[in-house]
Amino acid sequence: MERSVTDFLQLDTVTVQFGALRAVDSVSIRVREGERRAIIGPNGAGKTTLFNAITGVVRATSGRVLFGGADVTRAPVHERARRGMSRTFQITNLFPNLTVAENMRLALRGLSPRKFSMFGSGAPDAEETERAAKALEISRLHARRDTLVKEMSYGEQRQLEMAMALVARPKLLLLDEPAAGLSPAERVIVSDIIRALPRDLTLVLIEHDMDLVLSLVDYVTVLNNGKLLVEAPPSDIRTNKDVQDVYLGKARHDA
Ligand SMILES: Nc1ncnc2c1ncn2[C@@H]1O[C@H](COP(=O)(O)OP(=O)(O)O)[C@@H](O)[C@H]1O
Ligand SMILES: [Mg+2]
Image 1 (cartoon, protein in one colour):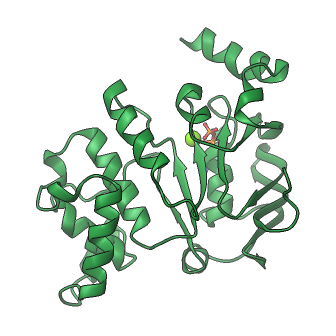
Image 2 (cartoon, rainbow, N blue to C red):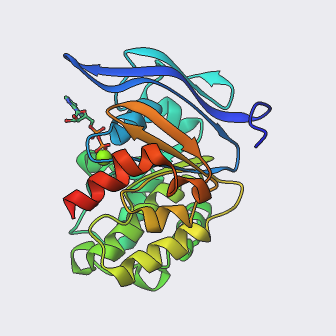
């Protein structure tokens, strides 16, 4: 795979240290524009921390994060968002007593539920309404726009998180375990939504479920103990000895 010309997201020897623990340990990753990349690995491997370093939720202790050619290593979250990064969280981040449409409006304004009291700058304009409708359509929630979030299934709430991430029209979408805790039927819906995302959107997907992830991505990065263990196309992951030892072996014991 030719990957040097248009690296869109580039991590150079990124380390994130919490006290004595190197949650991410000198990881270098390059993702091309439009690529779909999975980050997999056992619990505690550093996957979410890596996302946090990409999006600015934590700062890399050392190393560099480049996005769209710009060094964003020390840029705050909102600056990276402005440049086109959008993410969902592993822990659901919705406002349960509001409707789907109201949650979308918060997302459009770049506000989190915690900042809800600052919201109130009037009705959405036509362009915002159109963007929200499109994101809800992609996330298959268009018919649910007036439903209270607390009345929706957990699966639908995860779909809404994706819609809220998409409404910003990101260039890079980071999904942290979008299928975690879902039923098999709900997993199928989330997979179908991911598969149908615009092809020019660069996607980085953390997922614990190998079966789900290997059918969705172009390339896979495996982390273990904060370190990059293997990078390979999905077809080579299952047969990779290191992956079997560290990831599949462990998953089998966990099951
Ligand atoms: N804010 C934090 N402070 C201290 N340790 C953390 C923090 N966030 C994550 N860790 C630790 O870093 C390691 C990697 O965690 P995480 O990135 O959540 O792994 P994963 O998402 O792969 O399960 C774990 O040992 C976790 O306990
Ligand atoms: Mg995680």
